[in-house]
Length: 163
Image 1 (cartoon, rainbow, N blue to C red):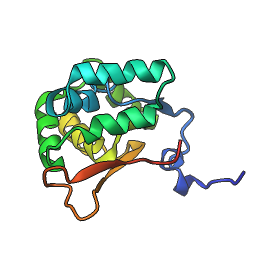
Image 2 (image 1 turned 45 degrees about the vertical axis):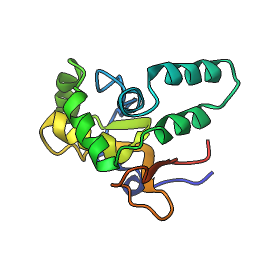
Image 3 (image 1 turned 180 degrees about the horizontal axis):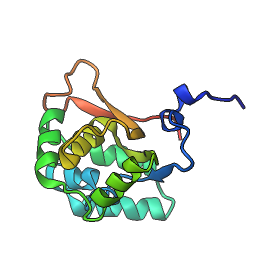
């Protein structure tokens, strides 16, 4: 197992005494952005909940279910982001925690199954300032072969790793 220097781990850059690790969807925000897209732009809540039940019954993997959910959203990615910016709100208690953590040199590291471009866009809008000091470890988004992410059926989730 290798070691890392503080420059490779942004949360360690200021030698904090504590680091706060958190989920994003439904924790920092009041609702899950991926569920919102699936329910409103994709195949809908009943199918999503059916996949959730299959995951809990060990019939399919979470990764497979999540990919199916996001693949059901045909909306161009930039429009998905715009729709989420209009409909996802900050959890009522998060702003006070955010301000306290920032003032007390407590880095916030977001560990999420969501997608970094969506998380970053929502943070920037909801916090009303540069939120780049928060590290995000999550998935990404990419264009499907031969497509552009900002066209119908043009994007897919790009998983952070193979887990």
